[in-house]
Length: 153
Image (spheres, rainbow, N blue to C red):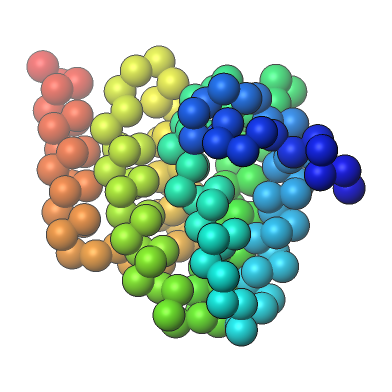
């Protein structure tokens, strides 16, 4: 695997780069590796993609050939690996929950044309992830309630 084919540092969070299948496979491989390493102490690699996952809510983030089923499968696999990593490393739990809470609020707040990807992410999280903190749950319910009421009127 040629690391020179990786997206430039910071391009994920800035949204300036469309990922390829190779990039997504590398992300899944790293997540899978970390999910099997209970003594992994460097949180940087564990959180790097998760912290920039909000960029993945844009359709332009994904390879052009990726359909909704492929995006769903990626989110499902990635979050499964993150959940396993948390099970192996309880110290990691608080940091992941704090990170995912903000991502959930962001995903719920998207109401533009690309809300479909963020809704897909929320669906995967609801099916396959950790509990969220009570305060974040309240914020998420308020955010979703506001969107539902706004769509009705």
